[in-house]
Length: 181
Image 1 (cartoon, rainbow, N blue to C red):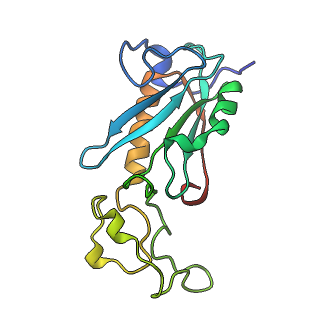
Image 2 (image 1 turned 135 degrees about the horizontal axis):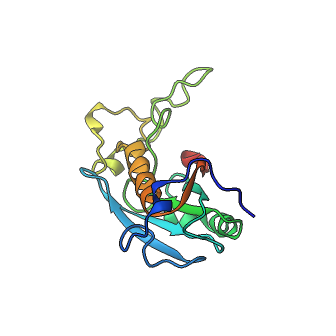
């Protein structure tokens, strides 16, 4: 049994005919395509909890895959979350298929607490991301992720979920692995 949230999202007070969760019944999953202006189209996966009630706020879990993964990488984690009353959104990072990644602090040239974690001899992956906002002329061999603004992407999807679904704003969780962790 859930406790009523202290801060229900705007989606708790509306019944949208369109939007990110429209047409989904409790326990269902849907792939959604979204594009933040000036970036690439991405597919994310939304899963509604088995016991979802549009008038009772549900916790939300955002899942971030590891380097090279996609919205399909969440697997049983998202299914188990839905079994426990949690809305899940498994996001896809930017980059070409097989190279999708997240751009955040430390993802490229990071010094690490004990010196460089990447050396001049490292393989450069920047050319793989030339269509993902990267200027490879300014890159060293340590660039191995997209250069797109993944925070903006995440906030755009989060805003949409909060507007269209009944989310407990006190229980929004971000989980992931490797580059998405």
